[in-house]
Length: 302
Image (cartoon, rainbow, N blue to C red; front, side):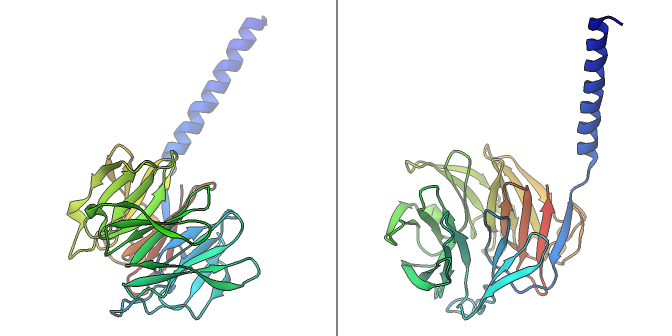
């Protein structure tokens, strides 16, 4: 057989394998799984560089903050690794590149104390933020950004604990969800209005989408995460997860609308008031916390 014929046959073989792989990938149905059933952590979620999940037990709002007291560290397989107790309505948490853990704690809707816990377990107040800060994200330089539910401010905390206003806009009153896209723009979702915004590092604001049909009695988007430049946002009272492109295309990603914890394919599974959401960007996993009664921690392997 001539070399040219061998080359053509090899090309056809590789092409057939590629088509088969793509076809199989497209036919693989994604599923919603329950990582931990009937689990009390119903607030903000975050994943560290090792793939471990941090889940805040916000609890029930009691006029002066959440009733929860614990922060959980959970393995990707659902094993409880550690917990921090004696907290006061912890809303959110994150880890920096040095291994320091930050907790948005003791929030009475007028101010919040950001706790810092170092690798040795030493716990110290890091910053006090006015208003009702909800979501937290950290940039590559170690600066923390926070949404604020009852003020128009997006706050910034530098590595020394100094708090400043990064940007102020009336559309940000009621904001909760926050993350970065691949270009370093902040993606912010308003809990009360279900509007989603992009904020460039220079402060330029662009409205990406408005999911007005999902808002009921002031409850819209719980939290969001950005994975491969797609926004995944929780529709907390419609019991669905939405996938939003940075250009503003909105689609239902998961949830049949029933308010309960039931596993299954994306469109057949039920979500019990999905609230927190985060992504393991390396392993392509979505994690969701549920605010509803007897809710759990859910997982979607993309």
